[in-house]
Image (cartoon, rainbow, N blue to C red; front, side):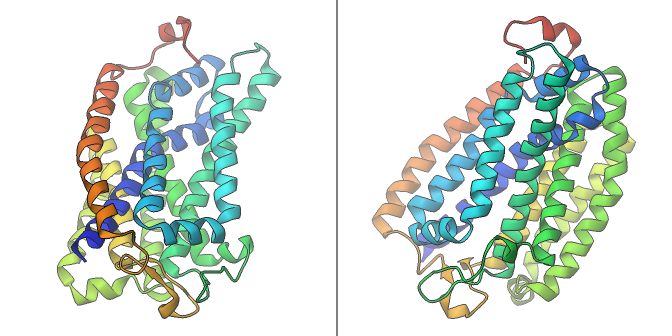
Amino acid sequence: MTLQTTWFFLWGLLWAIFFMMEGFDFGVGTLLPFIGKTDDEKRIMINAIGPTWNGNEVWLITAGGVTFAAFPKVYAVMFSSLYSALMLILFALILRGVSFEFRSKVETPLWRKFWDGCSFVGSAAPAVLFGVAFANIFKGIPIDQNGIYQGNLLTLLNPYGLCGGILFLLLFLQHGALWLSIKTGNGLQQRAIQTANRLWPIVLVAAVVFLVFSKFATRLYDNYLKHPALFLVVLITVLALLGVKYFLKNQRYGMAWIASAITIVGATFFGVIGLFPSLFPSSINSSFSLTAFNASSSPLTLTIMLGVVAVFIPIVLAYQAWTYNLFSSKTTPEDLAYEDAY
């Protein structure tokens, strides 16, 4: 049981890291048509995430791979139940990557405006759909005793699912605006700071609504009520969100971004802790739910994987830390002259 529990929280951690790292990329892509006033400013926005956005997606592959290897039954049921939503996410991610690469291939306003729109769709759609998907997991998916999904794409678009989608989008928009506050200068930076300040109270309201809604739509609070010490996770998340505003007010944008990152990780773990031990709860009958204990791989597989993760995850983290340090300076108009600039 210790192995299954360990992998359950590793599974949650990998998804939390993905949302934290890719969240600001989604935010920047969504803000692209609105904050960037000139073509150069839009290129600066893209190049602000250019060296890291594709590396950040490694965490999506890692989280998906862990789901497949550690909890194969969950992987099978998840990809059959959420097939439509996951395919939409995949197509949106492809569209986003293509938009970054193709935007500057032709120097005409219509061409670039089209790819700006693609960047918006390819960034906003995954942000919303990931939120919808995870909110539905928190709520429970209508799967029967055979793991067969009793619904369709519209079933997922219920009020609680949409509330989760909106919250994820707002968190990522704030995260992206804070990243631009760090990585850009002049008028673009000021608009990013203004956007982050305007988004903060909206994020706060959305977070409160989601927490209250979760009390009535899910059983997430059961674990917290059994073990009140777990409310510390909620407290840290709330303090981190308040910290975003505090650091923005004091013009400490790097710290504001870190506080935003902690908020996203905390929001993810709020759901993960509330789910335990369920990974894919059934809304039809709790006995049909897939848990860390009835859907895991063999102990030998989990042990071998734990050794692999212990070796390679620190390597990936070290490489990404080196990458972020290498490209830590602000993105300036002069950077657009480089041959490999977007």
